[in-house]
Length: 534
Image (tube, rainbow, N blue to C red; front, top):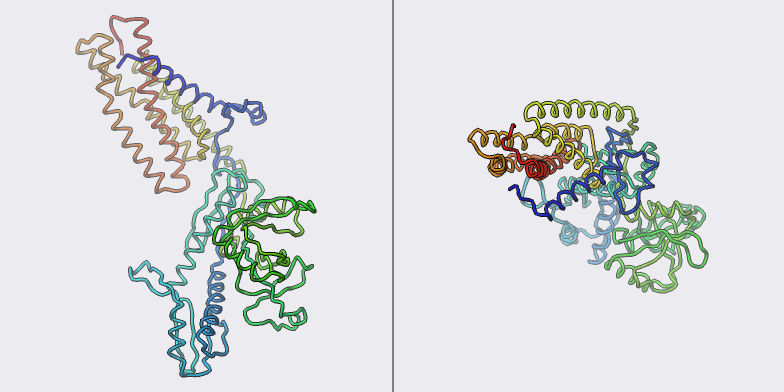
Protein backbone atom coordinates (compact mmCIF):
# COMPACT_ATOMS: atom_id res chain seq x y z
CA UNK A 1 0.00 0.00 0.00
CA UNK A 2 2.93 2.36 0.66
CA UNK A 3 4.60 1.68 -2.66
CA UNK A 4 3.92 4.35 -5.28
CA UNK A 5 5.21 3.65 -8.80
CA UNK A 6 6.41 6.66 -10.74
CA UNK A 7 3.40 6.68 -13.10
CA UNK A 8 0.96 6.80 -10.18
CA UNK A 9 2.80 9.75 -8.62
CA UNK A 10 2.70 11.50 -12.00
CA UNK A 11 -1.07 10.94 -12.31
CA UNK A 12 -1.75 12.26 -8.79
CA UNK A 13 0.35 15.37 -9.36
CA UNK A 14 -1.23 15.91 -12.79
CA UNK A 15 -4.76 15.77 -11.35
CA UNK A 16 -3.84 18.23 -8.60
CA UNK A 17 -2.15 20.57 -11.09
CA UNK A 18 -5.14 20.42 -13.44
CA UNK A 19 -7.44 21.22 -10.53
CA UNK A 20 -5.33 24.25 -9.58
CA UNK A 21 -5.25 25.54 -13.17
CA UNK A 22 -9.02 25.07 -13.56
CA UNK A 23 -9.75 26.89 -10.30
CA UNK A 24 -7.26 29.73 -10.96
CA UNK A 25 -9.61 31.89 -13.15
CA UNK A 26 -11.96 32.25 -10.16
CA UNK A 27 -9.27 34.19 -8.29
CA UNK A 28 -8.63 36.61 -11.17
CA UNK A 29 -10.67 39.72 -12.08
CA UNK A 30 -12.77 39.36 -15.23
CA UNK A 31 -10.66 41.85 -17.19
CA UNK A 32 -7.62 39.58 -16.69
CA UNK A 33 -9.30 36.46 -18.05
CA UNK A 34 -8.65 37.49 -21.65
CA UNK A 35 -4.90 37.43 -20.92
CA UNK A 36 -4.96 33.73 -20.11
CA UNK A 37 -3.47 31.63 -22.97
CA UNK A 38 -6.03 29.76 -25.03
CA UNK A 39 -4.66 26.34 -24.04
CA UNK A 40 -5.32 27.01 -20.34
CA UNK A 41 -8.75 26.83 -18.63
CA UNK A 42 -10.30 30.30 -18.46
CA UNK A 43 -13.88 29.75 -17.31
CA UNK A 44 -15.10 30.83 -13.90
CA UNK A 45 -17.77 29.11 -11.84
CA UNK A 46 -21.24 29.85 -13.19
CA UNK A 47 -23.29 31.47 -10.43
CA UNK A 48 -26.99 30.85 -10.04
CA UNK A 49 -29.83 33.36 -9.94
CA UNK A 50 -29.67 33.65 -6.14
CA UNK A 51 -25.97 34.58 -6.23
CA UNK A 52 -25.53 36.92 -9.20
CA UNK A 53 -29.08 38.05 -9.90
CA UNK A 54 -30.87 37.83 -13.23
CA UNK A 55 -34.37 37.60 -14.65
CA UNK A 56 -37.35 35.75 -13.22
CA UNK A 57 -40.36 35.19 -15.46
CA UNK A 58 -43.60 33.24 -15.09
CA UNK A 59 -45.26 32.41 -18.41
CA UNK A 60 -48.66 30.97 -19.21
CA UNK A 61 -49.19 28.84 -22.31
CA UNK A 62 -52.20 29.99 -24.32
CA UNK A 63 -53.59 26.48 -24.71
CA UNK A 64 -56.89 27.76 -26.11
CA UNK A 65 -54.97 28.64 -29.29
CA UNK A 66 -54.07 24.96 -29.66
CA UNK A 67 -57.74 23.97 -29.29
CA UNK A 68 -58.76 26.57 -31.88
CA UNK A 69 -56.14 25.31 -34.33
CA UNK A 70 -57.39 21.76 -33.80
CA UNK A 71 -60.90 22.94 -34.67
CA UNK A 72 -59.62 24.64 -37.85
CA UNK A 73 -57.85 21.45 -38.89
CA UNK A 74 -60.92 19.40 -38.02
CA UNK A 75 -63.10 21.66 -40.19
CA UNK A 76 -60.77 21.17 -43.18
CA UNK A 77 -60.59 17.42 -42.60
CA UNK A 78 -64.38 17.13 -42.46
CA UNK A 79 -64.78 19.20 -45.65
CA UNK A 80 -62.23 17.12 -47.58
CA UNK A 81 -63.61 13.79 -46.30
CA UNK A 82 -67.22 14.64 -47.22
CA UNK A 83 -66.27 15.88 -50.67
CA UNK A 84 -64.15 12.80 -51.30
CA UNK A 85 -67.16 10.58 -50.57
CA UNK A 86 -69.48 12.90 -52.54
CA UNK A 87 -71.69 13.60 -49.53
CA UNK A 88 -73.65 16.84 -49.82
CA UNK A 89 -73.55 19.19 -46.84
CA UNK A 90 -74.23 22.78 -45.89
CA UNK A 91 -73.39 25.19 -43.09
CA UNK A 92 -69.96 23.79 -42.16
CA UNK A 93 -68.92 26.23 -39.44
CA UNK A 94 -66.98 26.48 -36.18
CA UNK A 95 -69.02 27.75 -33.25
CA UNK A 96 -68.94 27.27 -29.47
CA UNK A 97 -65.92 24.99 -29.55
CA UNK A 98 -67.22 22.55 -32.15
CA UNK A 99 -67.49 21.95 -35.90
CA UNK A 100 -71.05 21.48 -37.12
CA UNK A 101 -72.75 20.92 -40.47
CA UNK A 102 -76.08 19.73 -41.89
CA UNK A 103 -76.52 17.06 -44.60
CA UNK A 104 -78.39 17.89 -47.76
CA UNK A 105 -79.80 14.36 -47.91
CA UNK A 106 -80.81 12.61 -44.67
CA UNK A 107 -80.17 9.24 -46.37
CA UNK A 108 -76.41 9.97 -46.19
CA UNK A 109 -76.50 10.13 -42.40
CA UNK A 110 -74.90 6.73 -41.65
CA UNK A 111 -72.29 7.19 -44.36
CA UNK A 112 -71.39 10.70 -43.11
CA UNK A 113 -71.08 9.51 -39.51
CA UNK A 114 -68.73 6.73 -40.59
CA UNK A 115 -66.61 9.13 -42.64
CA UNK A 116 -66.28 11.59 -39.75
CA UNK A 117 -65.68 8.78 -37.24
CA UNK A 118 -62.72 7.61 -39.34
CA UNK A 119 -61.04 10.97 -38.63
CA UNK A 120 -60.68 10.08 -34.95
CA UNK A 121 -57.28 9.18 -33.53
CA UNK A 122 -56.73 7.17 -30.34
CA UNK A 123 -55.32 8.98 -27.32
CA UNK A 124 -54.24 7.34 -24.06
CA UNK A 125 -55.91 8.46 -20.85
CA UNK A 126 -54.15 8.65 -17.51
CA UNK A 127 -57.14 7.00 -15.89
CA UNK A 128 -57.51 4.12 -18.31
CA UNK A 129 -55.21 1.89 -20.30
CA UNK A 130 -57.85 1.71 -23.04
CA UNK A 131 -57.22 4.51 -25.58
CA UNK A 132 -60.07 6.94 -26.17
CA UNK A 133 -60.82 8.84 -29.37
CA UNK A 134 -59.53 12.39 -29.62
CA UNK A 135 -62.87 13.61 -31.03
CA UNK A 136 -66.50 12.97 -30.20
CA UNK A 137 -69.44 13.12 -32.60
CA UNK A 138 -73.02 14.13 -31.81
CA UNK A 139 -76.09 13.71 -34.04
CA UNK A 140 -78.70 16.27 -32.98
CA UNK A 141 -82.45 16.23 -33.34
CA UNK A 142 -82.38 19.14 -35.78
CA UNK A 143 -80.29 17.06 -38.20
CA UNK A 144 -76.98 18.75 -37.45
CA UNK A 145 -73.81 16.72 -36.92
CA UNK A 146 -71.40 18.24 -34.41
CA UNK A 147 -67.74 17.25 -34.01
CA UNK A 148 -65.57 18.46 -31.12
CA UNK A 149 -62.36 17.44 -29.35
CA UNK A 150 -63.10 14.90 -26.63
CA UNK A 151 -62.17 15.58 -23.01
CA UNK A 152 -59.17 13.24 -23.28
CA UNK A 153 -58.18 14.71 -26.64
CA UNK A 154 -58.30 18.30 -25.35
CA UNK A 155 -56.31 17.35 -22.23
CA UNK A 156 -53.64 15.66 -24.36
CA UNK A 157 -53.41 18.70 -26.65
CA UNK A 158 -52.86 20.98 -23.65
CA UNK A 159 -50.29 18.66 -22.03
CA UNK A 160 -48.36 18.32 -25.28
CA UNK A 161 -48.44 22.09 -25.83
CA UNK A 162 -46.94 22.79 -22.40
CA UNK A 163 -44.21 20.16 -22.75
CA UNK A 164 -43.31 21.35 -26.25
CA UNK A 165 -43.27 24.97 -25.06
CA UNK A 166 -40.84 24.09 -22.25
CA UNK A 167 -38.46 22.43 -24.70
CA UNK A 168 -38.62 25.29 -27.20
CA UNK A 169 -38.16 27.93 -24.49
CA UNK A 170 -35.06 26.02 -23.33
CA UNK A 171 -33.64 26.04 -26.87
CA UNK A 172 -34.28 29.74 -27.34
CA UNK A 173 -32.78 30.73 -24.01
CA UNK A 174 -29.70 28.59 -24.68
CA UNK A 175 -29.29 30.29 -28.07
CA UNK A 176 -28.99 33.61 -26.22
CA UNK A 177 -25.74 32.37 -24.66
CA UNK A 178 -27.02 32.30 -21.08
CA UNK A 179 -25.74 29.89 -18.45
CA UNK A 180 -27.82 27.10 -16.97
CA UNK A 181 -31.31 28.63 -17.00
CA UNK A 182 -34.00 27.11 -14.80
CA UNK A 183 -36.99 26.18 -16.97
CA UNK A 184 -39.72 24.03 -15.48
CA UNK A 185 -43.49 23.62 -15.43
CA UNK A 186 -45.47 25.43 -12.75
CA UNK A 187 -48.95 23.99 -12.44
CA UNK A 188 -50.82 22.76 -15.51
CA UNK A 189 -50.26 25.55 -18.04
CA UNK A 190 -47.51 27.74 -16.61
CA UNK A 191 -43.74 27.75 -17.11
CA UNK A 192 -41.16 29.21 -14.73
CA UNK A 193 -38.08 30.71 -16.41
CA UNK A 194 -35.09 31.95 -14.42
CA UNK A 195 -32.03 33.20 -16.28
CA UNK A 196 -28.95 34.05 -14.16
CA UNK A 197 -26.88 37.05 -15.19
CA UNK A 198 -29.50 38.58 -17.48
CA UNK A 199 -30.05 42.05 -16.02
CA UNK A 200 -32.12 43.41 -18.91
CA UNK A 201 -34.94 40.94 -19.60
CA UNK A 202 -36.24 42.75 -22.69
CA UNK A 203 -34.22 40.57 -25.09
CA UNK A 204 -35.63 37.50 -23.39
CA UNK A 205 -39.18 38.91 -23.57
CA UNK A 206 -38.77 39.67 -27.27
CA UNK A 207 -37.40 36.20 -27.95
CA UNK A 208 -40.07 34.31 -26.00
CA UNK A 209 -42.93 36.57 -27.02
CA UNK A 210 -42.89 35.36 -30.63
CA UNK A 211 -44.53 32.11 -31.59
CA UNK A 212 -42.31 31.79 -34.69
CA UNK A 213 -44.73 29.46 -36.42
CA UNK A 214 -43.77 29.43 -40.09
CA UNK A 215 -45.56 27.71 -42.94
CA UNK A 216 -45.64 27.82 -46.74
CA UNK A 217 -49.00 28.37 -48.49
CA UNK A 218 -50.17 28.85 -52.05
CA UNK A 219 -51.63 32.28 -52.72
CA UNK A 220 -55.36 32.20 -53.55
CA UNK A 221 -55.34 33.89 -56.97
CA UNK A 222 -59.16 33.73 -57.21
CA UNK A 223 -59.61 36.20 -54.34
CA UNK A 224 -58.88 39.79 -55.38
CA UNK A 225 -58.10 42.79 -53.21
CA UNK A 226 -61.67 44.06 -53.67
CA UNK A 227 -63.06 40.70 -52.54
CA UNK A 228 -60.86 40.89 -49.43
CA UNK A 229 -62.07 44.43 -48.74
CA UNK A 230 -65.72 43.25 -48.94
CA UNK A 231 -64.94 40.24 -46.74
CA UNK A 232 -65.60 37.73 -49.52
CA UNK A 233 -63.03 34.96 -49.12
CA UNK A 234 -63.28 31.57 -50.78
CA UNK A 235 -63.84 28.55 -48.51
CA UNK A 236 -60.53 27.01 -47.45
CA UNK A 237 -58.68 30.33 -47.71
CA UNK A 238 -57.56 32.82 -45.07
CA UNK A 239 -56.37 36.43 -45.22
CA UNK A 240 -53.08 37.61 -43.71
CA UNK A 241 -51.36 41.01 -43.83
CA UNK A 242 -48.39 40.98 -46.17
CA UNK A 243 -45.12 42.72 -45.43
CA UNK A 244 -44.06 41.82 -48.96
CA UNK A 245 -46.87 43.94 -50.46
CA UNK A 246 -46.51 46.98 -48.23
CA UNK A 247 -48.85 45.63 -45.56
CA UNK A 248 -51.75 44.95 -47.95
CA UNK A 249 -53.73 41.83 -46.98
CA UNK A 250 -53.39 38.75 -49.16
CA UNK A 251 -55.51 35.61 -49.34
CA UNK A 252 -53.74 32.25 -49.13
CA UNK A 253 -54.91 28.67 -49.01
CA UNK A 254 -55.52 27.62 -45.41
CA UNK A 255 -53.82 24.25 -45.79
CA UNK A 256 -50.05 24.63 -45.82
CA UNK A 257 -47.86 23.12 -48.53
CA UNK A 258 -45.12 22.52 -45.97
CA UNK A 259 -45.10 23.19 -42.24
CA UNK A 260 -42.26 24.80 -40.32
CA UNK A 261 -42.00 21.54 -38.36
CA UNK A 262 -40.06 20.16 -41.33
CA UNK A 263 -37.32 22.80 -40.98
CA UNK A 264 -34.04 21.39 -39.69
CA UNK A 265 -31.82 24.45 -40.01
CA UNK A 266 -31.96 28.21 -40.54
CA UNK A 267 -29.01 30.60 -40.82
CA UNK A 268 -28.56 34.34 -41.45
CA UNK A 269 -26.83 35.10 -44.73
CA UNK A 270 -26.59 37.67 -47.54
CA UNK A 271 -28.16 37.52 -50.96
CA UNK A 272 -25.43 36.87 -53.54
CA UNK A 273 -26.85 39.37 -56.04
CA UNK A 274 -28.20 42.24 -53.95
CA UNK A 275 -26.11 41.78 -50.79
CA UNK A 276 -29.11 42.34 -48.50
CA UNK A 277 -29.55 40.20 -45.35
CA UNK A 278 -31.61 37.05 -45.89
CA UNK A 279 -32.36 33.86 -43.97
CA UNK A 280 -31.45 30.56 -45.59
CA UNK A 281 -33.35 27.44 -44.55
CA UNK A 282 -33.18 23.70 -45.06
CA UNK A 283 -35.93 21.08 -44.89
CA UNK A 284 -35.70 17.51 -43.68
CA UNK A 285 -36.26 14.67 -46.16
CA UNK A 286 -40.05 14.75 -45.77
CA UNK A 287 -40.21 18.53 -46.06
CA UNK A 288 -37.91 18.58 -49.08
CA UNK A 289 -40.12 16.05 -50.86
CA UNK A 290 -43.33 17.95 -50.05
CA UNK A 291 -41.83 21.29 -51.03
CA UNK A 292 -40.39 19.85 -54.24
CA UNK A 293 -43.70 18.27 -55.27
CA UNK A 294 -45.66 21.43 -54.43
CA UNK A 295 -43.38 23.75 -56.36
CA UNK A 296 -43.21 21.34 -59.30
CA UNK A 297 -47.02 21.29 -59.58
CA UNK A 298 -47.41 25.06 -59.22
CA UNK A 299 -44.75 26.66 -61.41
CA UNK A 300 -45.77 30.22 -62.25
CA UNK A 301 -47.94 30.67 -59.16
CA UNK A 302 -47.13 32.67 -56.05
CA UNK A 303 -46.59 31.05 -52.69
CA UNK A 304 -46.56 32.82 -49.35
CA UNK A 305 -44.13 32.36 -46.47
CA UNK A 306 -46.26 32.99 -43.37
CA UNK A 307 -44.66 33.74 -40.00
CA UNK A 308 -46.92 34.27 -37.00
CA UNK A 309 -49.97 35.05 -39.15
CA UNK A 310 -48.07 37.56 -41.30
CA UNK A 311 -46.79 37.06 -44.82
CA UNK A 312 -43.11 37.98 -44.82
CA UNK A 313 -42.54 37.08 -48.47
CA UNK A 314 -44.70 35.99 -51.42
CA UNK A 315 -42.45 35.15 -54.39
CA UNK A 316 -43.41 33.50 -57.67
CA UNK A 317 -42.38 29.88 -58.21
CA UNK A 318 -40.07 30.20 -61.23
CA UNK A 319 -38.99 26.56 -61.26
CA UNK A 320 -39.31 23.48 -59.05
CA UNK A 321 -37.31 23.76 -55.82
CA UNK A 322 -36.23 20.18 -55.28
CA UNK A 323 -33.07 20.53 -53.18
CA UNK A 324 -34.84 21.12 -49.89
CA UNK A 325 -33.10 24.49 -49.50
CA UNK A 326 -34.27 28.06 -49.96
CA UNK A 327 -33.99 31.57 -48.64
CA UNK A 328 -36.35 34.12 -47.13
CA UNK A 329 -35.84 37.70 -48.24
CA UNK A 330 -37.57 40.77 -46.93
CA UNK A 331 -36.84 44.00 -45.08
CA UNK A 332 -34.33 42.29 -42.78
CA UNK A 333 -31.48 43.88 -40.90
CA UNK A 334 -28.48 41.79 -39.87
CA UNK A 335 -29.85 41.60 -36.32
CA UNK A 336 -33.42 40.71 -37.30
CA UNK A 337 -32.18 38.04 -39.72
CA UNK A 338 -30.09 36.53 -36.93
CA UNK A 339 -33.00 36.63 -34.45
CA UNK A 340 -35.35 35.00 -36.96
CA UNK A 341 -32.77 32.27 -37.57
CA UNK A 342 -32.59 31.58 -33.83
CA UNK A 343 -36.37 31.34 -33.59
CA UNK A 344 -36.66 29.00 -36.57
CA UNK A 345 -33.84 26.75 -35.37
CA UNK A 346 -35.42 26.47 -31.93
CA UNK A 347 -38.79 25.64 -33.43
CA UNK A 348 -42.22 27.19 -33.28
CA UNK A 349 -44.13 27.51 -30.06
CA UNK A 350 -47.39 25.55 -30.26
CA UNK A 351 -49.18 28.44 -28.55
CA UNK A 352 -48.41 32.02 -27.52
CA UNK A 353 -46.80 32.62 -24.13
CA UNK A 354 -48.45 35.17 -21.84
CA UNK A 355 -46.22 36.88 -19.28
CA UNK A 356 -47.97 36.59 -15.92
CA UNK A 357 -45.06 37.71 -13.75
CA UNK A 358 -41.70 39.26 -14.56
CA UNK A 359 -39.04 40.75 -12.33
CA UNK A 360 -35.31 41.27 -12.15
CA UNK A 361 -33.39 39.93 -9.18
CA UNK A 362 -30.76 42.49 -8.17
CA UNK A 363 -27.18 41.68 -7.23
CA UNK A 364 -27.70 42.62 -3.55
CA UNK A 365 -29.18 39.22 -2.73
CA UNK A 366 -26.28 37.53 -4.48
CA UNK A 367 -23.66 39.62 -2.67
CA UNK A 368 -25.23 38.90 0.72
CA UNK A 369 -25.52 35.21 -0.07
CA UNK A 370 -21.93 34.95 -1.26
CA UNK A 371 -20.69 36.80 1.84
CA UNK A 372 -22.72 34.54 4.13
CA UNK A 373 -21.52 31.47 2.26
CA UNK A 374 -17.90 32.59 2.52
CA UNK A 375 -18.23 33.19 6.26
CA UNK A 376 -19.83 29.77 6.76
CA UNK A 377 -17.11 28.08 4.71
CA UNK A 378 -14.33 29.95 6.56
CA UNK A 379 -15.75 29.18 10.00
CA UNK A 380 -16.35 25.54 9.11
CA UNK A 381 -12.91 25.15 7.55
CA UNK A 382 -11.18 26.82 10.49
CA UNK A 383 -12.97 24.64 13.03
CA UNK A 384 -12.14 21.45 11.12
CA UNK A 385 -8.48 22.42 10.67
CA UNK A 386 -8.00 23.20 14.36
CA UNK A 387 -9.80 20.04 15.49
CA UNK A 388 -7.81 17.77 13.17
CA UNK A 389 -4.42 19.25 14.19
CA UNK A 390 -5.27 18.99 17.90
CA UNK A 391 -6.46 15.43 17.46
CA UNK A 392 -3.79 13.96 15.17
CA UNK A 393 -0.80 16.31 15.22
CA UNK A 394 1.49 15.90 12.21
CA UNK A 395 -0.92 13.49 10.59
CA UNK A 396 -3.61 16.16 10.99
CA UNK A 397 -1.42 18.65 9.10
CA UNK A 398 -1.28 16.23 6.14
CA UNK A 399 -5.07 15.79 6.33
CA UNK A 400 -5.58 19.58 6.29
CA UNK A 401 -3.31 20.01 3.27
CA UNK A 402 -5.41 17.37 1.50
CA UNK A 403 -8.54 19.25 2.59
CA UNK A 404 -7.35 22.46 0.89
CA UNK A 405 -6.50 20.48 -2.24
CA UNK A 406 -9.98 18.99 -2.05
CA UNK A 407 -11.60 22.45 -2.07
CA UNK A 408 -9.45 23.52 -5.02
CA UNK A 409 -10.47 20.39 -6.96
CA UNK A 410 -14.16 21.09 -6.25
CA UNK A 411 -13.81 24.67 -7.48
CA UNK A 412 -11.91 23.53 -10.58
CA UNK A 413 -14.50 20.84 -11.39
CA UNK A 414 -17.37 23.33 -11.07
CA UNK A 415 -15.53 25.70 -13.42
CA UNK A 416 -14.81 23.03 -16.04
CA UNK A 417 -18.30 21.49 -15.96
CA UNK A 418 -19.92 24.94 -15.79
CA UNK A 419 -22.28 23.56 -13.16
CA UNK A 420 -24.30 26.41 -11.72
CA UNK A 421 -23.35 27.24 -8.13
CA UNK A 422 -26.35 28.27 -6.04
CA UNK A 423 -26.74 29.00 -2.34
CA UNK A 424 -27.69 25.35 -1.63
CA UNK A 425 -24.57 24.43 -3.61
CA UNK A 426 -22.49 26.45 -1.19
CA UNK A 427 -24.20 24.52 1.60
CA UNK A 428 -23.10 21.32 -0.12
CA UNK A 429 -19.49 22.56 -0.16
CA UNK A 430 -19.65 23.45 3.54
CA UNK A 431 -21.03 19.99 4.26
CA UNK A 432 -18.22 18.47 2.17
CA UNK A 433 -15.64 20.24 4.35
CA UNK A 434 -16.95 18.36 7.34
CA UNK A 435 -17.19 15.08 5.49
CA UNK A 436 -13.84 15.38 3.70
CA UNK A 437 -11.83 14.42 6.78
CA UNK A 438 -13.98 11.37 7.59
CA UNK A 439 -11.80 9.07 5.52
CA UNK A 440 -8.63 10.36 7.15
CA UNK A 441 -10.18 9.98 10.61
CA UNK A 442 -10.99 6.33 9.84
CA UNK A 443 -7.42 5.70 8.66
CA UNK A 444 -5.76 7.53 11.56
CA UNK A 445 -7.86 5.75 14.16
CA UNK A 446 -6.98 2.44 12.55
CA UNK A 447 -3.28 3.39 12.61
CA UNK A 448 -3.60 4.16 16.33
CA UNK A 449 -4.98 0.68 16.92
CA UNK A 450 -2.09 -0.86 14.98
CA UNK A 451 0.45 1.14 17.05
CA UNK A 452 -1.17 -0.08 20.28
CA UNK A 453 -0.72 -3.63 18.98
CA UNK A 454 3.05 -2.95 18.74
CA UNK A 455 3.32 -2.68 14.95
CA UNK A 456 6.27 -0.84 13.35
CA UNK A 457 5.53 2.58 11.78
CA UNK A 458 5.52 1.33 8.15
CA UNK A 459 3.38 -1.68 9.00
CA UNK A 460 0.98 0.40 11.12
CA UNK A 461 0.39 2.93 8.34
CA UNK A 462 0.16 0.21 5.70
CA UNK A 463 -2.40 -1.80 7.71
CA UNK A 464 -4.30 1.36 8.63
CA UNK A 465 -4.95 2.22 4.97
CA UNK A 466 -5.58 -1.33 3.78
CA UNK A 467 -8.08 -2.21 6.54
CA UNK A 468 -9.94 1.11 6.45
CA UNK A 469 -10.29 1.14 2.65
CA UNK A 470 -13.47 -0.95 2.48
CA UNK A 471 -15.20 1.17 5.13
CA UNK A 472 -14.18 4.39 3.35
CA UNK A 473 -15.51 3.19 -0.01
CA UNK A 474 -18.79 1.86 1.45
CA UNK A 475 -19.53 5.09 3.32
CA UNK A 476 -18.78 7.37 0.37
CA UNK A 477 -20.47 5.22 -2.28
CA UNK A 478 -23.74 5.16 -0.32
CA UNK A 479 -23.60 8.96 0.10
CA UNK A 480 -22.81 9.35 -3.61
CA UNK A 481 -25.81 7.19 -4.53
CA UNK A 482 -28.04 9.43 -2.40
CA UNK A 483 -26.60 12.52 -4.12
CA UNK A 484 -27.22 11.01 -7.57
CA UNK A 485 -30.83 10.24 -6.66
CA UNK A 486 -31.28 13.83 -5.44
CA UNK A 487 -29.90 15.10 -8.74
CA UNK A 488 -32.03 12.75 -10.84
CA UNK A 489 -35.37 13.42 -9.17
CA UNK A 490 -34.81 16.85 -7.64
CA UNK A 491 -35.00 20.23 -9.31
CA UNK A 492 -33.57 23.71 -8.87
CA UNK A 493 -31.77 24.17 -5.52
CA UNK A 494 -31.86 20.44 -4.71
CA UNK A 495 -29.93 19.61 -7.87
CA UNK A 496 -27.38 22.34 -7.12
CA UNK A 497 -26.82 20.84 -3.69
CA UNK A 498 -26.51 17.35 -5.19
CA UNK A 499 -23.93 18.48 -7.79
CA UNK A 500 -21.54 20.06 -5.29
CA UNK A 501 -22.02 17.16 -2.86
CA UNK A 502 -21.22 14.59 -5.56
CA UNK A 503 -18.11 16.43 -6.75
CA UNK A 504 -17.03 16.90 -3.14
CA UNK A 505 -17.38 13.19 -2.37
CA UNK A 506 -15.26 12.15 -5.35
CA UNK A 507 -12.62 14.80 -4.57
CA UNK A 508 -12.48 13.91 -0.87
CA UNK A 509 -11.99 10.19 -1.58
CA UNK A 510 -9.21 11.02 -4.04
CA UNK A 511 -7.39 13.33 -1.64
CA UNK A 512 -7.80 11.04 1.39
CA UNK A 513 -6.90 7.76 -0.30
CA UNK A 514 -4.11 8.98 -2.56
CA UNK A 515 -2.86 12.50 -1.73
CA UNK A 516 -2.66 12.07 2.06
CA UNK A 517 -1.17 8.59 1.71
CA UNK A 518 1.45 9.90 -0.76
CA UNK A 519 2.47 12.69 1.63
CA UNK A 520 2.74 10.28 4.58
CA UNK A 521 4.71 7.78 2.49
CA UNK A 522 7.22 10.43 1.41
CA UNK A 523 7.58 11.59 5.03
CA UNK A 524 8.07 8.03 6.33
CA UNK A 525 10.67 7.14 3.71
CA UNK A 526 12.67 10.32 4.36
CA UNK A 527 12.55 10.39 8.18
CA UNK A 528 12.16 6.65 8.94
CA UNK A 529 10.82 7.24 12.49
CA UNK A 530 11.20 4.46 15.05
CA UNK A 531 7.78 5.23 16.55
CA UNK A 532 4.64 7.10 15.54
CA UNK A 533 2.59 9.58 17.55
CA UNK A 534 -0.90 9.88 16.10
